[in-house]
Every structure is written in structure tokens, then in C-alpha cells.
Length: 390
Image (cartoon, rainbow, N blue to C red; front, side, top):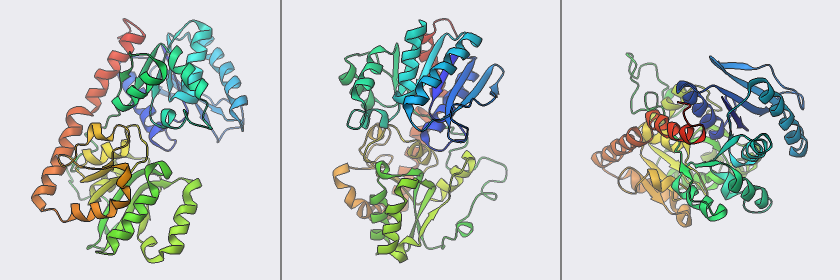
């Protein structure tokens, strides 16, 4: 039996929650019993919610967060101790290096179990610099029994930080039955969201972004690109998700400086239904991923799977999935101020050229980033962590 610790889990927002939920569901399909421990701001500090059943022998436990981690983590260890006495786990999975990975590694050391931690993105690129805790990060990487990284780029960083060469790459994946260039339902496109329903004019170019918009995702470059494109032709920016609360001031400043352009920013809010996300992605003329640092962005993978024409930065694992001029376009982080110009160049391409790029993007995800591929990867992880469990 596996104990899975994650800071976020469905219905929480963001790529971390989505990846954790997807991995747990796949593990359950592989016949692994999984207990999930996650934290919640909607419970009283220290409160443990009744378990939510997610499989025949799998549950989710939510723990109310204290204001600071110095109270939350010791209390969480008490809960883990109680759960282990009740269910007797074989291994512990920490999803994200801190706090989940650190707690998983520390707890398994105390109990004589085995641990695996999965590095996702910010946990390396931010935690190694102040105010991150470099010592805790390095200790976790050196003492976890098994480490997985979401990209080869991140795997190399872990090797440099920890000195170990046994890091496994466990890519993000996409449900390609939902995220595809068309709706495979008998109704075809008839039930899908339309431009009109979102208040988008027929002649407007739709620039898309999916996820929680914030600084690391290149928020300012997206806004600048909208300004540049709208100086040449009608366009809107469709944010499929939300703007992080701490970054709303950036959007407000843009609104004050560029009121006409700001009116063409459409924010859907959190969409919990993957099919709804896919419908919105299929509306996009150009999908933009101008990340400053990155693991392997779910939104980009889903956009490519939907057959979008994508422009992304060269951050993290993006160049591992998208090849410039073949299935999308890469803009170096040093040139993100030219994102709007890159969009205009892309829009000027012929229909045949765009079609080839879109098809190649969809094919790339279907071949290398599908749920089938994830099952194979997870079998390798579990076989190393808990031999003879599958």
C-alpha cells in the first residue's frame, strides 16, 4: 500500500493538483492501493476530514493548515503516524519536493520504509535560491530512495544538486481522448463552447493561455503581446483558468494604462471539467507559453494535444516536447519581449503550414505523452520502489 503526500489535490486549482490527481488515478488503475494526504485552507487548523473514497481501497485525507509550516508539518507527521499504524504502508510518495517530498523522506526514515519524491518545477528553480531552504532541499534529494523528475532538464539539475545519477524522468501526460483536435462525441462540435458565448467577435484572433496566470508563466509578456497584436488586427487574450490573487495588481496596472486592450482579456475562471478546458483550447488561434522557468507545463501539453499552434519559451522541459518550426515555435527567454512579433509572424503563415504544425503537435503528444505512456513509466517507478507489487 502506498501513502501519497501532496500539497494540492482535486478539486484544488493548478497543475500540481491536476498531476497529483492523475497519477493517483493511474496508480489505482494499476492495482495499487493509495492513501492520499493533502492540506486544506477550508478546514480548521489541524482538523482531519473524514476520508474520501477514490478507489476500492484508496482514500483522501485532508488536513487543515496552520498559519505556518512549523506547526503544520509536526502535526502532519502525527497524522501520518496514525495512518501508518492503521494501514501499514509499504512506501511513501512525496509529490513536489517541499513540503511533501521532505515529509515523505523524513517519515520513511523514521519508520524504516522507502520513499520516492517527484520534482515538478518550482521546487528546484525557486527553492534553491533565497528565501528557499537549500539545505532542506539538498537533504531531501540525497536521502529519498527514488527520485522522479518531470523533465530531463530537471533531472540534470537534481544530479548537480545531489550527486546522484539514478533520477527517473516521469513526464506529465495528457488524456488524449479528451484533449484532441476535435470532439469525438457523436454530436461533434455542436455542443462545444463558441466564440459568441464568450463575447468574442468573429474576426478576432484568439491568443490563449491555460492555467493559473502568474509571474513565472510570463504574465507581463502575454499582456505586451496582446498590445502588439491588437495594434495590427483585432485580437483577444483568453485565459483559460485564473489570475493568481497576488498578481492581480499587474493586471490592474495594465487596465489603467491600456483600457481598450484590457477589455479584450477574457478570464474563464477555474474550469474543473477537462472537457470544458479542451473546448476552450480548440478555440485558440495561437496558444502562448512564455514561461520564465518551468517543469513540463500541463497547459502546453494539452494545447498541443488539441492541435493548437503554440509558441513557448525555452524554459525547463518545453524544448523537450516542442521543436521549433516542426510542431510549434520556441522563443528564447531573452527574447520574450518579441512575443507579439512572433505571434504576428505565425498568423502570417499559410493555412497549409499552420495545418502541418498543428498536426505534428497533436501527433507528438499522442505518441509520447499519453496516459498509456504514463502507465508504463509508473510501472517502472513502482517496480523499483516496491518490487513484486504489480
